[in-house]
Length: 248
Image (cartoon, rainbow, N blue to C red; front, side):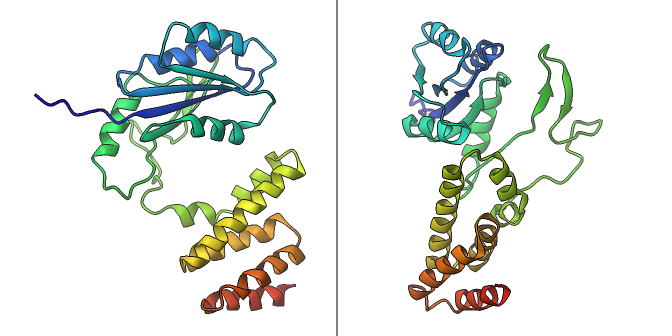
């Protein structure tokens, strides 16, 4: 009998000063009913005993890879560090003050494997608990039959997400340095160029609007002028440049 090989799921566990919760968090990961998991724990230069607790715990389980950053990278860079080390078909972003239900990975892999290949992300509800594990509420409110009360995002939600200006505003508030702002701006410019080359007008328009929110108008105008030189075939981009210059 041929046994189908399980898709590997990389669970990237990010930790920073979470000594009170990290052991319970990691225990919930290793206790998953799904067997095909890869566990990568990235300690982001914790100043408490988190790293020592992670090391002690990892000695019991060979599937855990532990990395300690030499400086604090903050959440996004810390996760990306773990992502580069991962080898799974699927990835779970896991914070070391969270807890996974025992069948979470198995149920999501089974569901993901049944979907068309163009589906990129699936998600579940989240239960908010306190230090004692007492439930306070769910991220998506439930009715008496434990079904979501509000309509959940589904399908092609890229434009829906990117059209909310709060995304960039919140990122800008969270960014602590000019370097972080600069990195986000460079990423936006990169995504805009690729959207233009792929002739994805809606995506490019939304990203351009977000870019306008992130930096002085004069810098965005310069970027648009340079982009327009290499993208003359896209008349809608010229239209955007004209409308933008009118605003300035």
